[in-house]
Length: 399
Image (cartoon, rainbow, N blue to C red):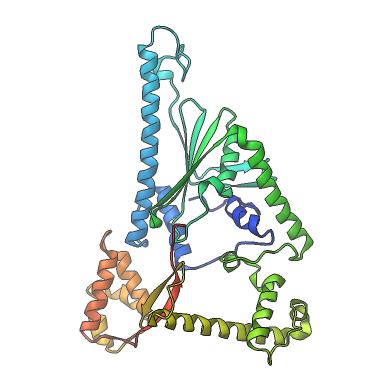
């Protein structure tokens, strides 16, 4: 994978969020799903397995590549029919390709990968799609974007990322008449697709330009007057901590639930005053406490059956673990790791050893070997689980 890539300030992947809130900006994340998604994209690009990927993610990569190959085969078959028509047609009429071309002169299917596409000479947006195919006649193309996350993205027909890439294809290849865009989310077993035609370009381009221009104005002004707080948009926004619209929401929560601590007249402007940083930190603390307490209360109500499971959430149960017999734990770990590999994990803890075991396990048995290792360690008394506790987590949904 090419590490020296141009990152447009208004890249296609940001457009959907920017359309909702022009003040939105992405933040870097080291979340395990983000890391896994980056590795999965690299694995798909290289068409090579990555031992550090779990079995589920490796299978997801294989599904994406298989889908791409099946779509490519359909184009190859269409080209074959065009070739047969040239060979068999003595009348001189052929719709797909000029009859003057010999069979071997029929263009091949063009395959593209991680190609940089710009819209309006990069003035508006530009970025890299995952895969693309261009039919032999040069009039039709398919673009593919893999999504390895656990949250459904906007459907292709309304997704500005897909629309931007399609516009870039129309701009780069003047013979194209239509582009079919696919978003494939293997973890959700979801594929959405949409066909865009050259006739739609002016309207689609106008929509993208408006989104980018509003975002440019918001950044140039340096204020958040146009901000529109949303969930989960704010969760992934780099400006969350300094957005006054979000701060206003926090002030209203604090004033309602902690009226003695925070009066009704508290405002985001007051929090922005350098003299009130202590007040702002106290506000952050109490809102965090309230949020945690509220989540705990709802979790308990769900467990007791006093309320329905909130839409888009699921109940997860965990228990902490402690190593209580290091000798037994090491003995079992060395069934999966070398002495050097085990030693390298000693300052990190249980998770590091599990990661090492997963990476060294054969493809298809990574999860099973980690579970078997933990089972052996527990049965031998090498580790002990703490008391179980439950909490609500957001759950992946297709819609």
